[in-house]
Length: 157
Image (cartoon, rainbow, N blue to C red):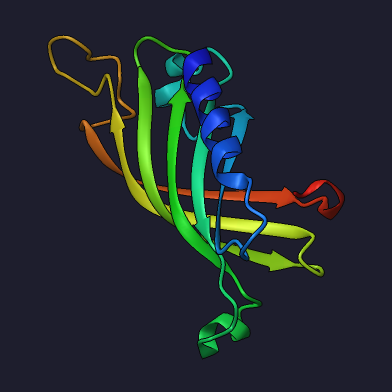
């Protein structure tokens, strides 16, 4: 995990230094940690820790050349890769790739991202070897994520 974050930081630094032309794309890295919400008592045995992970995203800016870009306040679009450690050996880890849109609000100080894609779990349900995992029924799953970030324009390069 440490090497992944270090290499993602190196990639971010290597593509962010440009002063000759206007950047039309950028890379961002987001770390997250949270809770698994109890949906029903059937998954109570799976909630053992606080999941954490990282989302590595490539974003392309829009400049209003098309009508929809102006209508939606110049959103960004791009691809995201996520890694999630669910802190439970029964559940395993999840890897996912998404197509996403970033929408901006309140003079571009609030960013809302929504993404849709495919996820791969390392330890899905199996009748003989992993009968306790009743959360992930197959190795490949559909996945959706939403993210909200506040943006501090003073520290942007």
